[in-house]
Length: 189
Image (cartoon, rainbow, N blue to C red; front, side):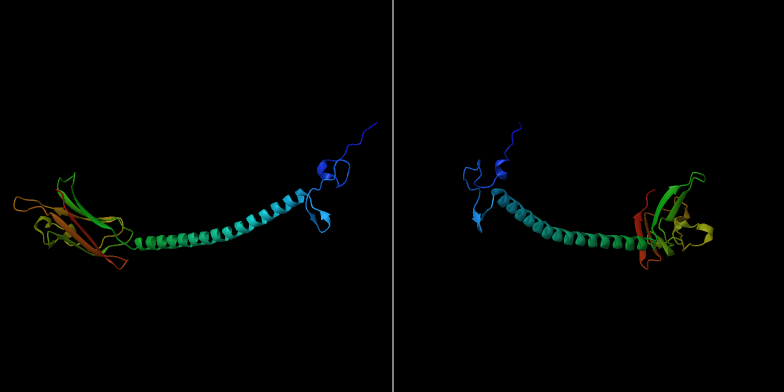
């Protein structure tokens, strides 16, 4: 014969044989609410509270993420503006080197920018390049006033016992940016 097993204690009705007349919870509206029901209500209330808190914090987080995204967009726009402005600028610099073939000194003014340099003025020790005694020989006999992007112009420098090498150079120019460019440096011999 199989013996019928009784249900677990928490599923038993009040007043049954194993209940011993104990009441499992407070009486509400004439019925007994078990502790499990109370725990379920408490957990449900806590879950709702956590959901509300998460919703509020999520809204705040979303607002801050929107602000960060707006800042990133502004930074990218600034970079793009700077890149476009940089594309309209010429970058001139000057240096002296010794030509290996002719063994003479050469003054080179080069444009490493992305725009053409116009109205280029080269001044050595306060004198225009074509008036300085060390650069009496100009390229093709005339002063060059335009240097294209990634291009250069060269001036032959003739040093004699009567001529001191130029020590300071100033280069000024205009370009597509609308700003006047200026380069100033000491020359090394």
